[in-house]
Length: 244
Image (cartoon, rainbow, N blue to C red; front, side):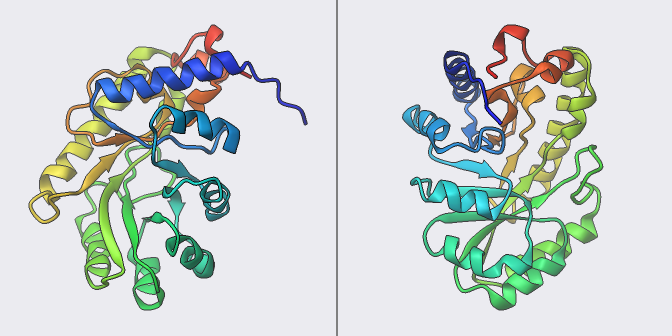
């Protein structure tokens, strides 16, 4: 396969999203799952980006080899990859994703190096994560984290993947408003116990068009680097923004 990349458009997309994050005082942790390229990643670094998101430990190793030292793996942790987790955690600041307490119990017993833990919240996409109203599930996960000196609770992470079913900016914004509202509620509920907790949404459609980010701490869009015809249909970009 050969990719035909309009690098000028890709650069413009990257700069635009980085500027949006800065304008809204959001930590920018872009998801590198779309480009999966050290060369593209270096352009982010040239803009001052110092933290990234990936969707596998293999991808984390690839980017760690190019100097990235703050990586969130935004995919439910697989305890069978414990040795890879150890290799990475020895070298970088590694954040993992939990959707239930069982893998956290395994990590509590077997981790040799500290890692950060985000709890994944299902904001409506219905793919994975704890429901925001599942207090028992959230508390069970927090109990495992608190029981281990190797686990640090970082906050709540979500991906409003149902924004991909939108067909207009108004529909995107409706998803965004519900997603950020539930994250604000969780943040308010747990902030007294965890003053430094973060809330982290991250889908490209919402990150491309929304202007109200009150209470949010970071964003993790990924598809925006290249965009595509689906994103045009959704209302996230113009045809002229597509870079591949």
